[in-house]
Image (cartoon, rainbow, N blue to C red; front, side, top):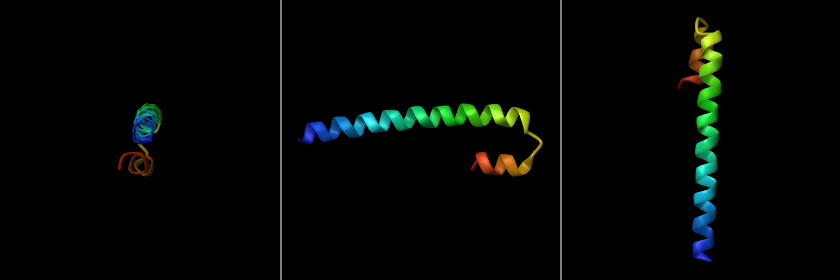
Length: 46
């Protein structure tokens, strides 16, 4: 039971990391197009 819980937690952790990395990439791509917009920057870079 404990091992199963740990492996599920680890799996969820890696999935979350992957999604966060993808978010960073997407936001950086957006910022290259809208880098003059300060509202955009404060929204995505907190």
